[in-house]
Image (cartoon, rainbow over all chains, first blue to last red; front, side, top):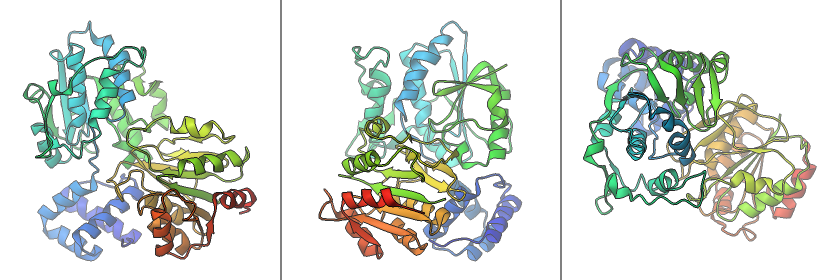
Length: 281
Length: 186
């Protein structure tokens, strides 16, 4: 792949900001460069053609922005986290009247539905409000439909079993819970469909974490933002941990990717609780 | 700082275990492992490798600082990059490369970029071509590339692909790899 000169990266970021209103200045330089190298390779373009075309072609600009953002998500990715949510976190909310949850950077929504399934199992589905946002409108459209490739989600069965059918605090307990309760499959057509009663629960909305504030004007008991901030620099990470702190209800919980940790100044404002972070007063 | 990167897939686990068992506590260099894992054995890798090794082994967090004598195992389902002149690790969930996440090419190429000529890349047994481009990048940066002797590999596809992609410095048995690392003086 072509390597891109530093000056060209600066020009590119300027064009994306001036022509599209997207600010990548606090994106981690390394991941930004990696994404741009991949885009040039995929589009079969050189950097100068790309920069010049971006100034004129808004459609291309929107497509490039979508391709810069990383959209990996899985059903019950990292089962240990979901076990902790099920056994440690959610039981606290049985007595609360309603629960507000925000999936920030929800991508195609697989974790939104994973979480909804847990809520159903714990009898908390009805009283929970779910909000989900992403910068990329394509992934939001997929998320709302809840229809996925069966093959691409091939690990989900294993993750589902680990997350829902095993009690990590009592290994002798095996919970029988057929996944067909929540999803339909068609292996031949390569389809995995979330059952209708889980759809229309979450409110999906386009939202830019970098430039916009709390998108729904509520305080959240739980914010999911997994493997999103790893693409940002330290300054922006710290700002967003601050924004999340402001958006969280008292004692609210922030769920990050299992290999992410809060570094820097904001780390003092959260308490690490196992695989999650709790807001400190 | 000099860094050692090791990549492996099918058949590499016992070799990696032996390498880590043979290196002393306070080994002067950091080691970075990028091993493909079977999808259903995602966890327990660190524990298994730690059983026989004196070195601290971690699956690092994003932005973790690198320490000499520590072993950094690319976490399941993340790509692992070495950055900032070999002092920091960053993780990503970008697309799979060579059907793999972690991808050896990604870790090796980042090592070539960040360590330059102060790097040793070791590629072990495996059934796909991941790591070949990475070996070439390490070699092109003026550093050392070692592959496990194909005849000794449980699956030889990976080492053969690397030998086709670049001129490797050494084709070693696992015993030779161990004694090379024991004597390594960067």
